[in-house]
Figure (spheres, rainbow, N blue to C red):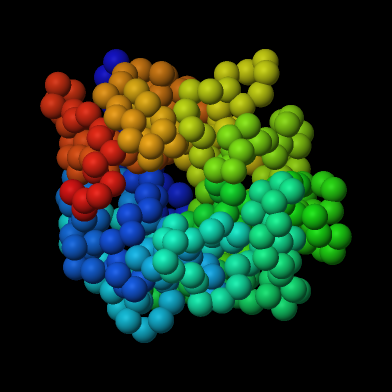
Length: 366
């Protein structure tokens, strides 16, 4: 099936993308001490030169002591760190690309390095890393307020550095998502409660603070997921009505686009419709939506961390849904991690040159 739908320009909030392909955020851990290197900048520039429409960076930590669980994941605060991120965005722009940093707080997720601990207590809504699993103490109201301010400060810095948009990581069982999830948010204050819209207040307050920091005309994206790394079967919104009650307040708080993470983009979100998560997000909110999940590859990305390889897969179903208007943009992860020329090869119909994905790509900056 021709890939023409992927290569039409797209504009939102004053930002014009040359095509519909977004580079998905992928943790790389190649920033010693939290500072991106020249090699990191070159890695992103190669994707810009490879015609990616919008690059979203790997997750980068906001200003909280335990926002990250790995010393080699980059931070988005501090003079040295921000100077390095300035180099990254300048290189992307020189390569003809656009870029957004993904602002991240891992919450109650243990260190990936058994010999290292973050310089402070882990943050979480109720002191749980997963349902029934105690891990630390609940955040105080002051700590919640400081975390909200940390996201806003990072977004303000992103705009000042010349980034074209900003994304908040609200998915996959990390801090913002831990507030969404009833299994990890047992709070009885204004940031908790039995209903999803109440538990979503933390995200909404972050969005309001970010919007105030960057102004009305700067694109703000939030990445969301139903599934959690702690539980692939978790589902925050079990019906379209529940999803509407979750997403509409986030849109009203300042989200311009919803980046809707699924392990497999083609899986329907609710019975009775083949719409996926991104399709429902666009239908219910009218906002821009980005689909993601095993685009262009045979295997899903969680299994890839266990060493599973993947082969190139048909884009026909993706293109059918994009052409139908289900979603606006398509995020590509592992295929672009493996091959910075993936977009060019698709555009030029050089599909016989597409590369298999091998987990060894996680150990390099190709």
